[in-house]
Image 1 (cartoon, rainbow, N blue to C red):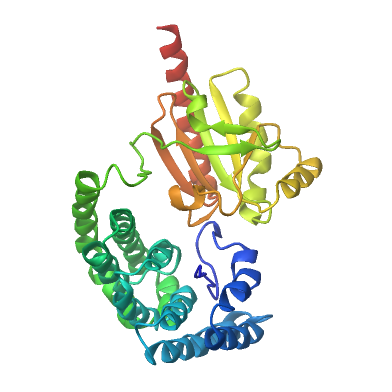
Image 2 (image 1 turned 120 degrees about the vertical axis):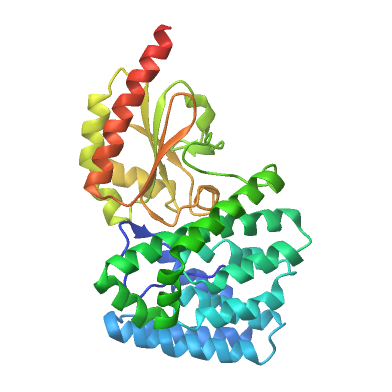
Length: 366
């Protein structure tokens, strides 16, 4: 089962990486069929959730988070428990802390990687740290250990960042307390410095112990290879663009902030014409035909690749929301990452791109 993220409201700058078809809908209905008791509760939950908003939606999530947790408690080591706990985590409520704790029973199992992959796509919960540590210690699969280590680094970094936001923004803090509970929020605020320090320590372990087993995507590091397809189905690679400054824009046609960036992207591409620069929009839409039809009505005169929802880039490049944009220099080193469509960040990225293009031109001359 692939757990999902169904936030009652979304307060981030981008659009959640759990697209409509990955949220409370088709995929969950298909996955739930694996177990009759989970399926029965899932269908009941999905029926109650449809059409809800605001506090009503939050009430449904809280109610069914508790029901899935109780179902999991009946046989904590069973596959049914694992499925139920995955639902609990995806809902992002206060019960997620208990679910993360119970999932340590499954730290040795093959399925645990499914949960590890979505830890950083749901609301930050310090209880996730212990689960990831347990997977690193107990799972015999080195690749799963490496994945847990990578996600633990990201979890500490996200917790520190989230803690700062919650400390500074009273409105956001109140919403988070309502959703996750005051204890979780207080822990995030109290442990900002400790989480930053822990993140650096685990990052060292990741580099020393698991570098050969995991894709590391980080500012200042060489961009890992991306193998995708263009809109005609031809294989394309990120490495084929070396020597040019690349803006890698991971997006979807159904993402409102992504669509909002299109006019500015047209201007950027026009400005960079005939320079060592390329804008690559990588679509995660399910069907390439959807992208083509969208572009028929919305001209996007630059390079387009189609990755699809399961093509790997969402996991490998740590995409939590759309758009996620990476700026890569002519040597293939990541220089900036932007999540969302904040105008100030986009402007800063374009200014940096201009400087990098000039550096690329100088390098070509020399």
